[in-house]
Length: 239
Length: 258
Image (tube, rainbow over all chains, first blue to last red; front, side):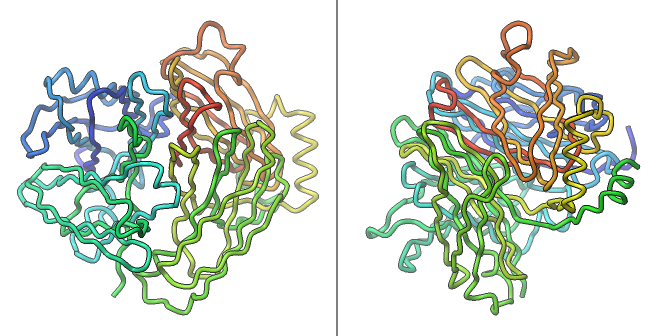
């Protein structure tokens, strides 16, 4: 192993009842030249308590996340999954990406393919921004009203409690502000009101010091299966 | 080396373009959410009104419709339902978006069947524009010696694909060049090569690859997680399409890849 390795912390959330597969290297070549140097999975309960951790051989292609979670704990609530990797920048000049694929067991709806949320490390100028002028935005098309949307927010920080503001913008300029305080490694799902005073939601913005992890989640109105699971767009305000 | 030689002789012009795929089925409709929300966080204010030109290509790379939409402010967003002559078939293609210099926001794409919707975004990447003589030459060479040019394929990606009885992932390929693009596919499971196929995509053309049908000659039942090696003679990209037990007759999800 090289003594000059880079680090990257990525995150996602696991729910019971889903087949969930994680590609530890996206666009992995057949010869496995794209290889991580070290790979650890860490699991956290909503209150931030560590449930368990597992080191995985970086030669693996796809990890069965459900089997991995069940191997560390019998836990029925949502789990924050942190993926801590070390990698050689000569092999991954930008940073490695991790994608995943999940499907609710027995459901007739389509499975979801998505990218892990890179939280800390990797590309210093772009990930792990610590200033308040870092904005995460998600716009809602009209079709979004066919589903129930929420935001799952996690705090990957080791020591600091994070306050996150969630700003929901509605048609006609109506604004609804909510906030939550998350302990280190804590996480929460915040449901979004898709209509407020008969005005539909246009966009949601997440603001917080540090780099809270946010996924916008769309669930089927009847049954609650996840149909949409994706990151925010992150923008840096230029003063 | 090959890329450099081809670039020198064929003289493609690389133009960075914002693009997305589009996909419709009998059940699923496709729309774009045009916006420029990023400008809200920048100091440039002279962009507005911002005129966006959306060009929709079909499977064979022909322009089927051009849309002009006007955004009046940084928080303005316009939803655009993309047209398709469906007739119960799966239709797909490429959409490019052009705006004033300085426009740079992510455009969203929605697949919806009235109950379920999937949202992803487009990408800002290079599209190679070849002179017409070079395009004709590539088309002739691809037709005549196509099977032998895999070793010349200078572009490549590798993708895991998921094929189970109740759910699967398929791929929507887009040719990011104006010349014919030869794509070579090799399907592997762990270390074992299962089968291979090739596909010619016309300039700016697209195709949905239903993996179970595309590799129907593969021995045994295609089930599990596979590695798909893709090599191509020109620039390309793809989106991952998730399908449930009803495959393309049911709801679909869509996701961009890096």
